[in-house]
Image (cartoon, rainbow, N blue to C red; front, top):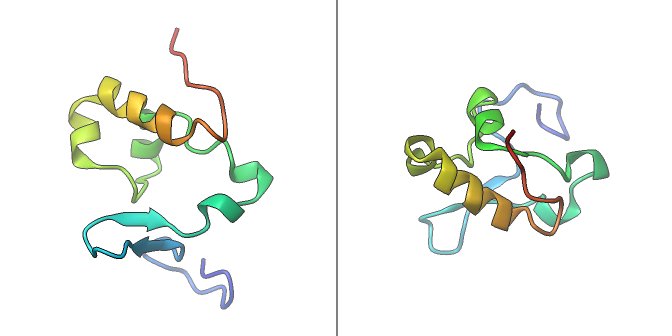
Length: 83
């Protein structure tokens, strides 16, 4: 939903193209609510949620994708450990 209007959206309202116009970035990342700071925890969760930040190469190599995700999320949560 759009945070101001409540309208159902087809994509996240915080997802914007970067200054080069080639990569999406999350504009709410550093200001996100505490409850959201641990999301996403793993690539499978992103696939299940159809996360717009998921890159196709991460679907093909989930281990490598998980390592990248852990680096990106290192300021928010500990690295994901599978059993």
